[in-house]
Amino acid sequence: MEIKVLTAPGLGSSGPLHWQTQWEQSIPGTQRIEQRSWDHPVCADWVAAIEAAVAEAGPQVVIAAHSLACIAMAHWAQQTRLHITGALLVAPADAERPGFPPEATGFSPIPLQKLPFRSIVVASTNDEYCSITRASFFASHWDSRFVNAGPKGHINAGSNLGEWLEGQRLLKELVQNWPTL
Image (cartoon, rainbow, N blue to C red; front, top):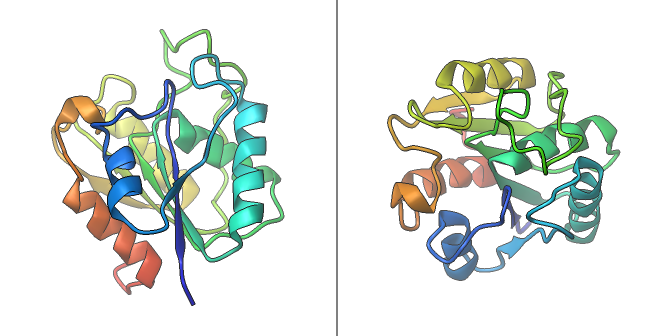
């Protein structure tokens, strides 16, 4: 049984120095969930793209989502009948915070129901888009394991993580269903 990995970037997508892009290049079979609009996202469109990608990949898939895609995953989980192995939800963007980009629509209110798959939420203590307290709140409601990554900003290309080996270890836990969950 082979587990596939799909990446789900956030607002603006992930550039060449982002860990998601580097995983797509270094982890065999890893593919990106493409969105119609990276710069003017509509939640319903993002959810539909996740649905199509999972339908094509099958249930033996783990999704590595970043930022706004974490919120899209929470919306998708409430609507889908499809199954996945798990999700790594990295630096969820708080779509309910003051100053949330107005070009991103339909992401709030953020679903707070338990996710129907294994998940890990990873957050930073100095993320400008979501406080560590808020990320922990999401993890608690989603029934996700919570990982405090320390001061790593938005856990993106600006965080200078390269291939982000800590994240790869967490991804491997989900793929291999390690008992630490």
